Length: 394
Image 1 (cartoon, rainbow, N blue to C red):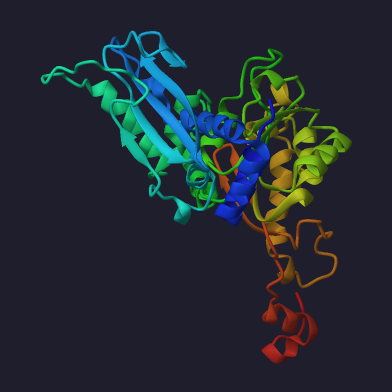
Image 2 (cartoon, rainbow, N blue to C red):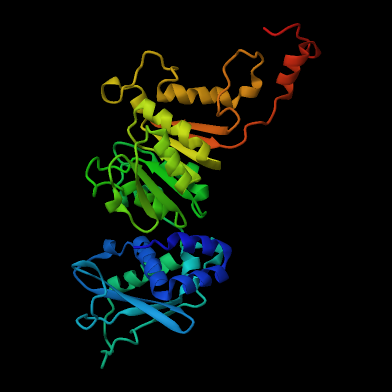
């Protein structure tokens, strides 16, 4: 199935006219399928499953035409397209212009609008010969409609930790407490168009296992495209806005080919093998493909220390052949303009392109950006130390 989300995200960033052009090119039915899939992904109606039934018809319109999908929630879970005839309660119908819907889901937040929306009950498509005056509307019915409307209104999103639990990733669990740090360092990008690459999909060799963090990022970045790179074939996990790539993170040529095709990236996350040679090779290859002001995260730094599982070492904690020692070099690089002697340290490729670093337990963030502020005092010390009353450099 063709993923039209990328075209809709790009068009929604430009404005309604461009969205309408995509609808004309792709067609109302295909556009609606992409948007309704996105609505249902974000609404998590499966959380509401109970012994009773409730349904909603989502209708998207354009230039006098419309297309509808019936979504039912009941004891059997979420069912798409079930007949409404056997339901105890006729479904509500949410009607909205398809371009407004695309802008609400994929456009800047200021373009979210409910101006074209109607909420009808019962649906005109359902024949109800008689409704009892004392008909009781169950709580589930209200909850289903409310979930869909919350998605269309882009209401304040839930915490990343909650999304991690929902999608089954261990980024927030007894093993790791990474999500508060990700929230802090990536939260400013949440409403932006972003491209995310995560190394390591999970599930080992099982092609249908893993992917929890990819879906977490998909929901966390509602306008984002998410790519997962793994040495195992994980294409069974592909979804709209989520694409997996089969490649070895220790192979620079494969990484460059991936970056040339799908990059540049706003966020790169290394949750792959955790072996230092692989982590370092990935960073050296992919960091140049990280956008200005992008963020590169390296998880599970314990691999740098554990020889038994990841070939790490505790013999020299500053050894640049191991992940943490490699990252420590960049801390000095942040202050490269303060070095007074030419032979203090060999220049690194990241000295002028890393503007910030943040370390947490087993997790590091590297911020890309220009690091050339200059150092007037260091310049004086190098060129004319006597002006500061200093005889010579120590």
